[in-house]
Image (cartoon, rainbow, N blue to C red):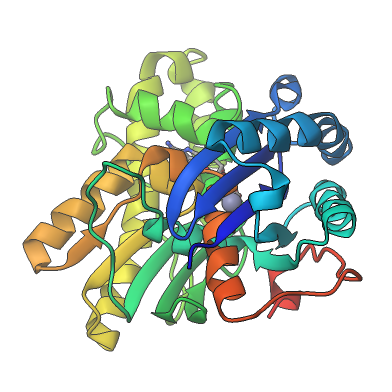
Length: 341
Ligand code: KG4
Ligand code: ZN
């Protein structure tokens, strides 16, 4: 029995819809919101307005590209949270309206679980390796940084997480402090490729267990730039690539230190990465190389499944729908991860 799932994602600044048949991707449409670029960050009010403009054409295109109609769809999966409340409200309300008008069941999805399960997405004609349970995921995004034991499709245990900022925020702030633009992660990544990662050193945090902290290193970059600009007003321009490479290396060192500890303690050697920062080429290389060195099996997602997308929401919805986990029409969005199951 095939299940066709429509996924809807609107947690931050990407409006996205996707159709999957079982675990196979049929279509994925993402409308990214350019409006935030000139402000150097996501403006929540503008994000929800843009979602309202985008949601109907994005869902329509996803159905058309997949060659299906709402009649063929078995369930509507949507991101319930975490995310920006005004953004989530657009996707949640749209999904509810669509469910009411078509009689199709609703499945609520935790955005973070979506990032984790994106590694199971299949595409016709593309051979890929998939993890076996249990595996470890390093979940790295603009809002979260976690190490998760994935025991089954819907059975997760968070064993470590950031106590302050997410690693994506550190990338974005680095770019902002250096006046490089937004979103910062991809810009820092690109410049880092041309720089010397050992040129500058940053003090790494000292946090207990498998937890992370990124606020201290952000401040240390701020002081580092301030002090060097006093000596040379062109310091940033003259050292752009080396600063990006060195700062990126420090962030990856922080991520890897705790991941290595988690592998050691759990004995789990299947490792995946997910979330927007898993698009980072330095992190991708490091995970693969550590994997080769330490005999891990590593799963690095395709670029298009790293940043926010509805395909990951559809596949998580598929696993929930298969278990009968639909939700009622009075479901409300939730902005914080700690309030979700
Ligand atoms: O998962 P995501 O799209 O949204 C959230 O759920 O937060 O992640 C967005 C984050 C941003 O901080 C962005 O700068 C970062 O992912 N990012 C990257 C790269 N591409 C996106 N960070 C480092 N290197 C990249 N290539
Ligand atoms: Zn995300």
